[in-house]
View 1 (cartoon, rainbow, N blue to C red):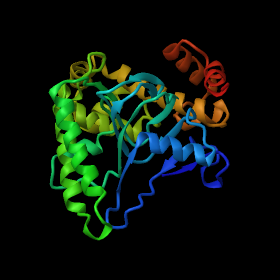
View 2 (cartoon, rainbow, N blue to C red):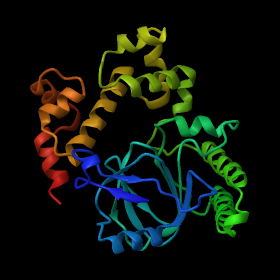
View 3 (spheres, helix red, strand yellow):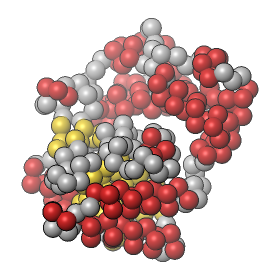
Length: 299
């Protein structure tokens, strides 16, 4: 991985990103690294472990020892043996407290899993749980075994590493994760069926241009009532709240980790007037955009 940040002209004004840069020429699109080795790599580069960064690839982390805290999109999760983290492209994350946690990270591009597998659907979904606490449950043993097999294949002499084996093993890992019960504090996107899946895809394309539920219903050929039923089944919230939550999330990302003026962020998110954006943000986060930015950039 290569870190880019505010000093990089290509990333000026953007959320700092970690670029994908796997060492294996024979296995393009996948890197497997121990969490402790990643932290050591960052320390050698002089990078702070607690800085927020954004990734354009998937990161699966299975914690095997120690403890730590990790934040994904401003939600902090405790990490201990049996914790599984899945950070998706576009999400922001930071090691709130790197602590003593160690485990294996699978970093992969959306194109790496085999497209013939139903795992391909999973990597295209930008939403979903970020953390499972598996503890010593049988699911942890299964995933630990599969990840161990991936590490063994990845560690073979370069000329004998099989990208196909790694792709199939990764697909198996993803399908096992798809079987896991959803965390108690998160909804189940599958409960919304095809309607919810289509809506979330359209929302990701259009959240910065419209926040009207009627617009999404018209584009998808549903009624607002149908979209609301699907959203309530998947998240417990009506469609308008799901739309607003997506806009509010992107606002938090941009406020916390860019230097763009509030008015510029407001325009990027489809607000004609910065004052309307300020009212929207305060209503949803119970804090003004300026105060939120100061809190998250103060460190």
